[in-house]
Amino acid sequence: MKLRFAPSPTGLLHVGNLRAALANWLHARRHGGSFILRLDDTDLERSKPEYAAAIEEDLRWLGMPWDELVAQSTRLDRYAAAAERLKASGRLYPCFETEEELSYKRERRRREGKPPLYDREALKMTPEQIERALANGKQPYWRFKLSMRSVAWRDLVLGERSVKLSTISDPVLVRADGSPLYTFTSVVDDIEMGITHVIRGEDHVTNTGIQLDIFEALGGNPKTLTFGHLPLLTDQDGGPLSKRLGSISLRHLRKDGIEPAALVGYLAALGTSADPVPGMPADLAPGWDISRVSHATARFDTRQMLALNRRVLHEAHFETVRDRLPDGADEAWWVAIRGNLDLMREARPWFDIVRGTIVPPVLEGEGDFLRAALDALPPEPWGADTWPAWTNALKAATGRKGKALFLPLRLALTGEDHGPDLVTLLPLIGREKAALRLRIAAGA
Image (cartoon, rainbow, N blue to C red):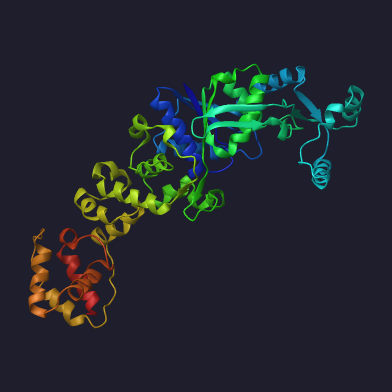
């Protein structure tokens, strides 16, 4: 079994890309197959090396190593050779119409009540007409002559599927500048690399029909290929995910502090009846079953992903996150604050509160209470009994209780109205800092 993920390095990966990549990776590992990362970089103008590097970095971050890395830009000779074979068999033919001419033809067919398909006029050109066009400086682009049949397959996700090729325009496989398009290069690579399974988005169903026709024309056996098409994702409001890619690119999520185990666990369960559990791909592969993916559209709900992210952080051991924490962070501090985190980036402010210097707000009307709290501040050493002993003494001395007792102390000590349990946080702050902050908040 051999699967591939073939992104174009023309931008950053987003969650839609990752869902397809993850499904391929999990399916390969679940069945002892191999996973190829194939960069679709034949568009030399739009493909950028920094995007290729970002794709590799994102997959490493997510724990998805590949068995082979291939760049299509290194295989242009293979595509040229395959194109010559199709030309020789009469399946790849030259076209000279401009985009304006094609647009006019499509509009005319619409007015006539016909589907706006390519009319195959180029097939009627004589060799002399072709030579004349070339002599006049025109460069042809090349279309694949589709067979007039229905292509059918049993999809791993969608079940029985078929595409009527007679309802589709002959696709352009080679541009006028000689560069091949994805529809073509993907088939050539799948044949020559021995790809056995192709898992991708439902928007590729029509492409699958076309590519199976090309596959056969190049001598491939369609029975060696199995397809699975994942229903497209929407955002949490049901809108097209594609309109919000910038806000949910993997780079954006990583920068915000989303944990890879949360993102992977959420996407692996998305569209199935299973409850998402955090986990890296290697942990989830043994239980992966693509047949559990629903035919229905799935919603990518950032709130559910954040809930999973909280779970990951709240259970994370210090050693597993140590390299991402501020210098000087220790296990006692991490254990004290981790239960208050939604995202890893929220850890830094709590480090400053505990280990650094903060200036709390002056609390109007609370001066007398805070000065009483300062006078009652116990001597060190401090431990788990310091906070309850101190607040119980204040409660007896001032008559305060509940929010009136605890909120001014929290605001004075941390500058925040909520946060980690002060039973564990107060001993980490220490008496000297606590006393200074009480004085400042009291307006002393």
